[in-house]
Image 1 (cartoon, rainbow, N blue to C red):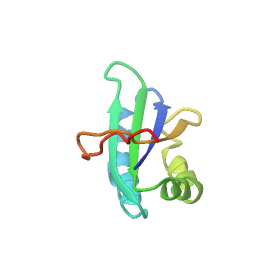
Image 2: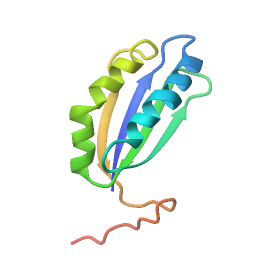
Image 3: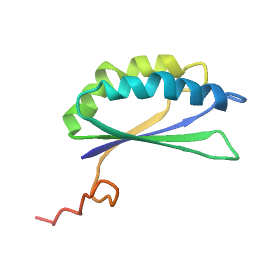
Length: 106
């Protein structure tokens, strides 16, 4: 399993609009993507930072989404977030929620 971790900054006074767009447009888009398994959204209650973590069944599906659909997602969010978010893709080594255990070292 792979995680795409996106860190972004909200524009001033845009938290409510961001939440609306995220739920009504971004989540439905993600659900249509091959290999998408889950999305978690974290917000700084006192600041503009937002971190979104999407989980994917394979690195290939995460990368395909990044190339084909993510540019459109960014366009959808451009009115509510500041410059281009930071994106990282990491392998999930352990998760109690998804019942993934750490892989043994080879």
